[in-house]
Length: 97
Length: 507
Image 1: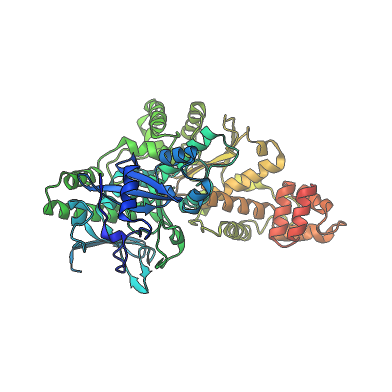
Image 2: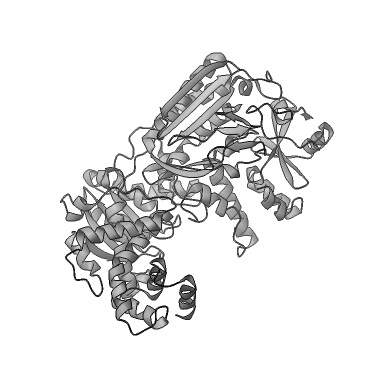
């Protein structure tokens, strides 16, 4: 799996033509790391870092792009498993619901 | 950016959907070929409000721009639950779907881990069927929920709740709710879906796009799934289908004419199933209603078939519930009813609610249900004897004042909650539409405790306003419950909030 970003999740913004913005702290290297450790669910892959959830989708065989998601967008089974394992705290889920 | 294809369908004063397709500004980088092909913008119009209009970095943008194929796929895949599933997940927590999803997001603290996990799964599954956020795949969408509500399609929204909305983006329309006739939403939505799919199919041989076009055409076929969603009798879709099967077995024993009255043209090919009495009734009961209760209620529905006209049918009026103001509306409707129909009645003492119902031709019956939370069921319509069926197992109905309140509450439903074809079959309980129930509670309180009778008792009483003794005197004279009397006196400003709190504490 290779991470290949979609420009629509990056700055600078074109008014009305962009998606959820990836934080600047998510470098290409970190994005690849998140992808490598991600969990598959419902045709997408999910990862989390510092209480924020990310979703990745495959746009070409082997090539993936990602974007931040609200916790409610993460499939319940993935979210519950992470809460149980202590990967994410309930407070973070509430904050970024 | 040149628009290559565009379609607006519907009436912006009710509901309209606009889709436009243009060139992907990033020319396919980071997206599939089909997603890039279907890049464009959409607008959702509800009662003159474009829910997609937003300010972005100081500029007004009319459409949400993003990859549209996932949205088209989501609308198609979830068409049946959107247009047929009314019941909210886990708990009937709020009047609107958007508010209920926010309120119900976290499981109650008293649930054990297993039950809490089931709660979260149920919430997520419902959200994924009804919230357009589920189709955003990284775009910035408004938070909008679509669900069936009685004989309408409810659209509720809260722009502040939009997921991962950048601070530089502000949707114009903060929050709101609209309930629109089903056909006024289904028809334009379907038109745009079909034409968009046809356009995209002409541009690509992609199996994904052609499969979407096929599924959209299939939306017009008869689908058993729709009835399962409509009755919603189960925690999962499989359970709903099973319950539907047993209802069908019951229906198969009925005469054709009776079956048609109870179930309407439930199997007619259309974009959605129109409301019919059995669905209206079961749509407001617990999803866990027992099989025995289902049969009891259906049998009673059959016994209520009657083509005669009754006085209440001429008095019943259209009064869509005013979301957010249901209590005030209930008070107003009761005052209007009193002025129009009770001006000749005695001006003191308890209101004779049973005599009122009898004068309107309403039959009062009784039933024992396993579900003790169903207070009563009201049914009326061109082919039904107007009836209030009291559940003897409900704790309120075991006392005179509770029984009277239930009757007054059901009268409100018979007068003002008739659906399509002026029919009503509504079970009052925790799963009935909250704002409809609140309005009926307010109606009942005002009808049983009109302000002039309350004022009479207060002025003639030896007891101090705000005292427990006076509250009991009001309740006993008007034959209502103590709590209902206290709350009503507070609502009519006879007592203060502090008095009310103290009276409820003291009882």
